[in-house]
Length: 130
Image (cartoon, rainbow, N blue to C red):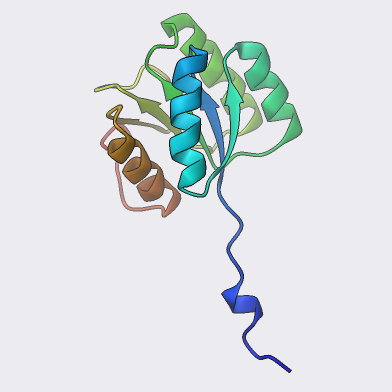
């Protein structure tokens, strides 16, 4: 009998919704996040966001800055409808332009991965202050 085997199992990876404006941006960020061990659902349109929100739950939503401002507002409203408490991380922003529990981060790989990790760990970070 092996004792402690269950504690050695990998934890369930965090589930992320990644919203970007272009396929090129999607491939790059998807690669970064998946290599870091996250389960990522991509979206390039509001329809993709709605379908993803209907089919699964997310620990965090990531929105690229290149997404048009009106689209960001619609994404924010859609996400808040399904997941009122889910944090939204806006990449490449200094100030958020989505209402609610929003954070901002730089657009580099390191900024993105560090910010996601801090939010998921529930570090004591005021919104919009990464």
